[in-house]
Image (cartoon, rainbow, N blue to C red; front, side):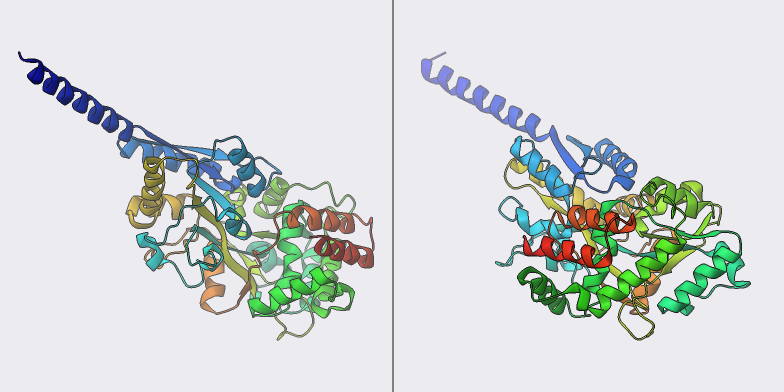
Length: 426
């Protein structure tokens, strides 16, 4: 064989080996998902196992944000270590903080099927869509219907709770029936990111006005002690403290115990969101009869917040555009499309993980009653802004101040001063 022919043969062999290696690499793509919804960790792990089993050459692993650690902190730590997951589930208010690291997703099919306003907090100033809306959520007072039916001596009508006084009367009726009215879970994320966020949400139906209110807190022009809605919310919190299952030791409670107390009917009401259903279901003795009540802020039924609950997209997936390979990025995008468009993907995400989807093409709904209650509020147009543009440490800092107020260690004036100092220190 001539040297020329031998050289050509060696070149062809090398090319074949190169293409084979590329094919092998393409068929062995590993991606990691950061999950920041601890209540669906098990379900998401099962989804990842199933997707891995049906997808040639792709394996998916789910890691969790640590207990007590914000998704923002966990994501920053992973980037700093050079181990950024292909998909990172972030709080809505944190998405734009990663705009230099997130892959633009404008060309994805699901963009056209996303529900109205679901991409607002995931769109950069230059128009790049940075994230996939993972779940719609809502919160308020979760009620155990059989407990309330017994307390009122008939069929409980949730529309009757539309003022602070009507809430007090309900608490009195529950207590008179031999049950505790409610339990307050003292976690900082619940108190800071959800309960006190109602003080912002109840300012206006216009999100621009909420932003203006927050700007006033930053520049010191807003005084919470003079704000009617903020004081009305804290009046309701004082009422909650009075009837709290843990009123003798209000900081002792845990989220898990809240799920047990409401699920077993030891209390009639628990302030929390629909994300709690998987855990409530573990203790459910009410045969799935639960719903949401608004958190009243006044005795005027027409005031914002008295008949509405906060609803919005709370979690988004960004696709890492910095530390993952193009093959990993494509695998991540394929996984998201599977969740939206494959019937099995829809079923596993919406039904198994109890996710309220943010896409118009998905017609199945979660089987849980809390999701159904949220959808009732949406259809009745009885929703308000789920304020999700809060700074990353708001839930920890303001939540800690609320814990002090819950425990009786500070007055309302002192609590308001701490919240104002937090905003002015940003």
